[in-house]
Length: 94
Image (cartoon, rainbow, N blue to C red):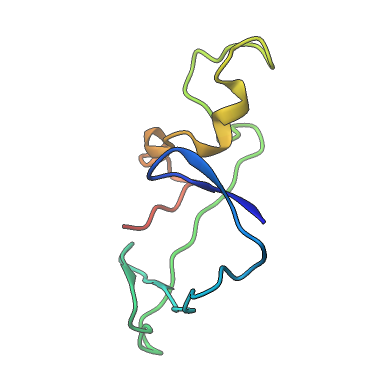
């Protein structure tokens, strides 16, 4: 398995998945935008958003370089996406 470790900005290789010694841990998304290791109460509710195809969510900040013309293009999936937090069609959790 080859995975990207965003904290160190490096690729890691492992002989298999899950990584030997790893322990599965549940992480829950809560209606207030928080993350927790505690499951939400049944009465907590949920978050929602409406997607507008006429106003798609960008995956890189504007202005955007052309596809494959910029040396950082191959890293867009690991780039900081916080610039999207204020959009009504994006859910963020902390």
